[in-house]
Length: 101
Image (cartoon, rainbow, N blue to C red; front, side, top):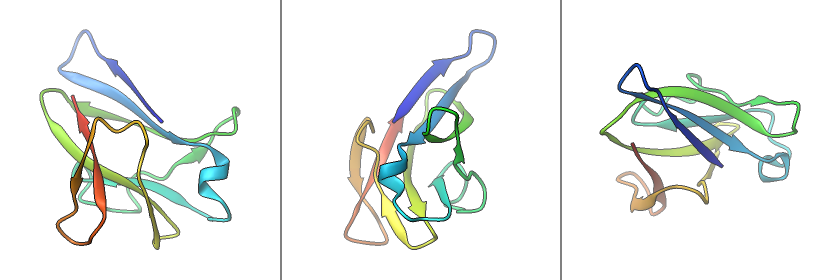
């Protein structure tokens, strides 16, 4: 799930990336990775919320397009059903989610 909140005082958008627990399965850690954090699985881990969702919120520059995915246990790659679009990954046969801000 993706929630976008555009900030009125800065050219930024607060983006909340989240996944339900059943999408994560038995994974011990899940992160959102993308070109906004050099695909670093340690940079933005999802944390369990009171609602049961696992989420991470980032402030990203507006007027940009970002590619992203979720990675579970540094092995399993997941896409977000609410991505704005999908493009072929340059490193695998999978697609990356696209976030337009």
